[in-house]
Length: 319
Image (cartoon, rainbow, N blue to C red; front, side, top):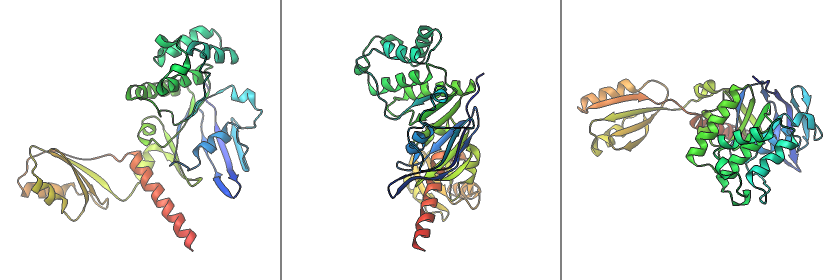
């Protein structure tokens, strides 16, 4: 079991001229934690990562990793960090094997050939190890980037949009790799706007909008804090269009979506409307096979929270 690194930011701020990209950001990620850093494009996620890595110097505030202030020259600390950037740069004239061995030796990895083979097999690239990286697809390059980030067994993984460019099988591979790395005690910092993927991987979530941290909590608490609607899913033995329209006219139904003999109802969340739906179905003599309340996912939570926050900021600006 490894010792993951602790991340802390104190009033972290970055300005570009008059534009504030990150505004008084206060994060705390504990060792071994899997943390999702979420926000729409332009929210300040990548700028934050560049400050975590010491590439951008904060305008104000500090980044601390294991209680050590991060500076651009803190190489000893950076040796314990692995990074997968959204846009990665490779040496296209090298083969994947040459490329990985270059970084393995740069980091002084013990038994680099053994480590390199294990990683390339894990990401499904061993068969193509002698192919020049310039001939790789975007998905293959992304997988090679994961192997490079892991080659020196880092204690902290910082990942920016880790599944972009991957096919469904590649996404499953990466998801399994991240779970395995967390099980080893590594700290994961995953920045993304693909919320359904983050939801499957992280334990705690920070949501950023307009450079400000607007929520930071455990995954389950984020779901519970979402208000405004519930979703009820129903499956019938048979369902005609007239019945769908009648159900859609119920006063508490905000929206109805149909898929064959199944419907999904978006309702207010002020009460549990399943009993009222059940009575209506019984009156219409419809054969109901299943009815359940759908679990709110992080994507719905994210949209609700950020929209509410932006509306609040807009109203403050008018005062």
